[in-house]
Image (cartoon, rainbow, N blue to C red; front, side, top):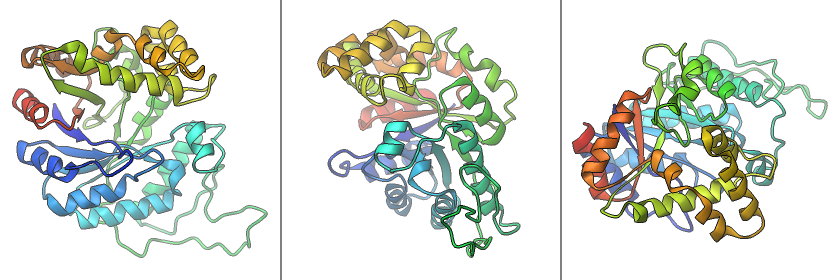
Length: 338
């Protein structure tokens, strides 16, 4: 099992020391480092900064939002950074949700998410292969643009830049069973959210993952912290879950709440959302079960983390993307896993 460092996205200001942490991860033998985006910092620019200070560690977008860029624009970012980093980019993509897509990007959330994702990946792969001008007779990403408000002068184009790798890995963030099954068919890896190696939980995706070809990557985000007090270590994870399950989506359309429900916490997910949307955020966070936060993370003393790693190693997971800013946690996991 490989290790990755997941830096996420910035808050009100750039995260202090993020490049130094990536350099440390590379020196410890971490396989990859990942950045994200929401509605603030973007995913590609910090990776470029990291690329300039490193030489071996792979660079992942985890995730770049599809609504933020057309698929050809995303392919341009990917080709450029792949060249600058000597072939180290891992392109992680995700659809996001209706609140962000419509509220931040000003675009309609697709009525058929599966189709929208499939078309997006198709276009990106066409650009990377550079076999012929890129065209797609699609519902969401048609090329050239055929709409009635266009000029009709659109011309199929090939990228001017020759891609460094036609097979640059594409990984997808997917949560529902159908989305995961499609990810196995069209992508090189899956970036799960709230993945649990607990017996019975990982089986939720057994059928979807069964056809995965050799080398398919399963790389969940795993919150980690080496500490003596488990409850204290879980508190920020519960706060994060309260925000995402409670507020990152509308009452009837919250993918995070749906995922928590599928994992056996349906009543708790509904209650968290109810409280959060009523403006009772502190109560929503307090409602997040410590057991749920615990099973999707690695928190506690070194011995406890070492013991819990056995379940992760027995699961379909190929890469643990560790979310931490703590050098001690970074080093401890390297010593235990690598």
